[in-house]
Image (cartoon, rainbow, N blue to C red; front, side, top):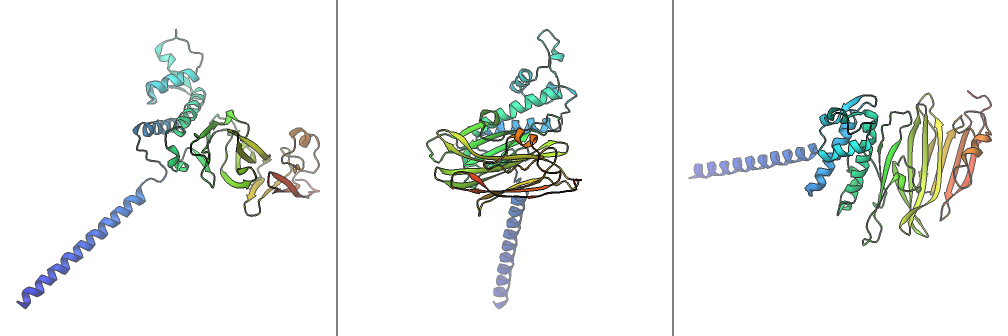
Length: 337
């Protein structure tokens, strides 16, 4: 009897151990599955929305393979009928209906880039107009092809992507998406060409700042302006009467140094200050510390004040409405390089 009880207990302990180990294995497998799950995509329950996002991914992937000076038969690029029609509308290469069928589907890469830009921006607007789209973390939308800047309050997004024009100026298309605080109002979507409040090349960060008119946004960004220069900019805007109004703008272009360094624009949220630093050069030959932001281009270039590679620093402080020059500091280089 004692032996039977002993073996019964032993079997129970063994079974319990197997059960716990099985649970551990399942938990480990589940954790591994979660770890392996792509973190750069959004999963949409709406199949129509999901298909639209997948088609936009396809455009980006094909775009990555296109060389501007090469001709392509667009029928071999796995586009659907509507996309082929769009490419033919926006990518005309002087082809006429009288030409052969084969010729009517041949397009140079530069024309395809124009078409792809139109299709991507159009699809992006459609996606952002989708019902309940703001319930998703849009920072992951079309990653890694889009740069998505999200404001700290989650209401304003700026999406941008390389236009791939082939020039040394790496121009970008950007789209802003804004959800008003009043939930009954629809989201505001605008492509860069629709408004002058934003810089068309897009932004990488968006901060919020309270003002007497409500929440304002401080957007910081930059773009490669040429093979040796970089454009940097910062913008403050607020939303009023159905549109964005620009309250402050600072931008400049500077040459890249041998170590790759360029000028810098930053925002200190705690101190509520914008700071700028750069070296004077042929792109920015003067002190660019205007009292209300960037000086007029002609004013700056017609009146160079300092030798090349003189250090210029500007500090702008928030006054409740906008940013005003607090101080500037210039270290003159008497022996330009």
